Length: 303
Image (tube, rainbow, N blue to C red; front, side, top):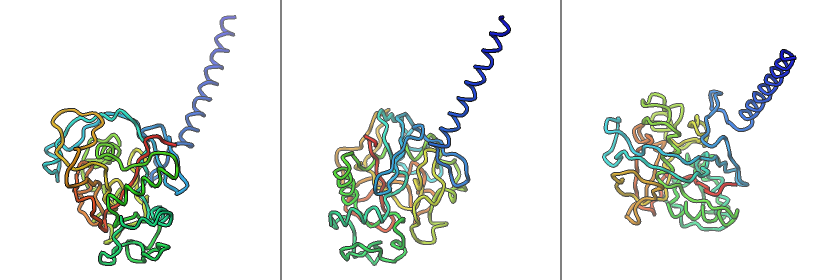
């Protein structure tokens, strides 16, 4: 009798194991996107994501603690990258790519809020100011899937506010801490993939491989949390004013209350490898509009 009971228990255990294995396989197939080389990207939030009607995909970034800034021996380090511990107590959804020309055109057609775009700067604007905001056809405006550039911090903020009103959800620029946390995706090295820039070609469009132009988003490998172009392609606006980092540990930092410059991050098609590092900090006046400066959004509330 005991042997029979034990045999039944073994059968049940095997069946449960098979079911668990099937469920695990379903989870991988359903939720985890693949990198360009076919390997799964490890997402921080179990693969939770949503896509809105503009085709903007967002993935969940779980809360956590990380070391922001860079160690003193990191190659290419700047003096404003003082390393310190940051805790983010609230998760958020981050856009997997930079906002594209096509997505920004939808905003312009709906609002005609044109003052955030530089229409006359040396023919570098990706759009024509013709009411339909057609592609300019220059090297920055050949494809709706290229990142939107020549847009100021104010223009990026206006887009986020419009999208928030349109959808009933909150969209905004990421804080500088949120941006670096998401860029690192659990890494502690100079780049999300390692310490040396020899692997940067796989993840970024930058000076060595971009051929002097922006490229459609999501053509390179994503980081471990499923985010594309966090290194290179175009710089990305953050919400923060620029300022010195604090000396101690901080929780949910949002930068100084005021300054003359806003932060931008990530490197660009026109920059060297050292500017694509996860810790590198750029700063510029919020009204600036440039041919290698764009943005991506976060959504704290989710779908």
